[in-house]
Length: 123
Image (cartoon, rainbow, N blue to C red; front, side):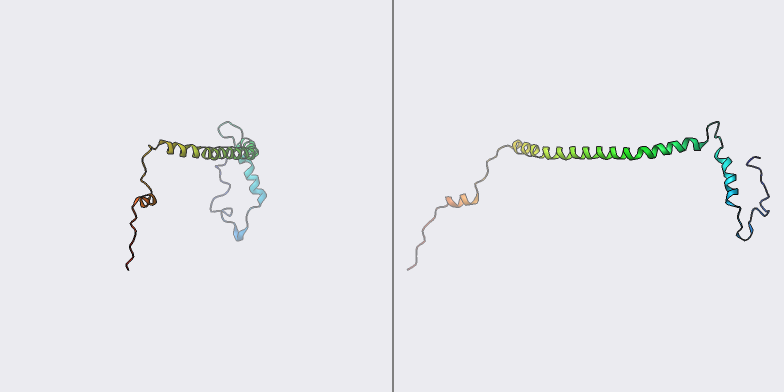
């Protein structure tokens, strides 16, 4: 029997079960089992290939995540160390790169140079 042959007509009793009566679960599973063994263009059943692949993927996922977490921690620590070591170097380079320019005298120094005249008391 092929899967294209109808067992009953669509208008028959199997198309509309009366009063919520449905075929037994075992009957549905019996119809499903041959479909699992269908060979797609001369190859093994999909279940035989997909099952082990999924199992291997689940077994490998944990260690891979652990390794990637370790790598991320090492890269982050190296970046942080690089920033901590680079900041003083960059600050010193910026200070030494400026040309020395004469600075104006501070305000208190200019006040000290103003001659002070004594006040006279009014008598």
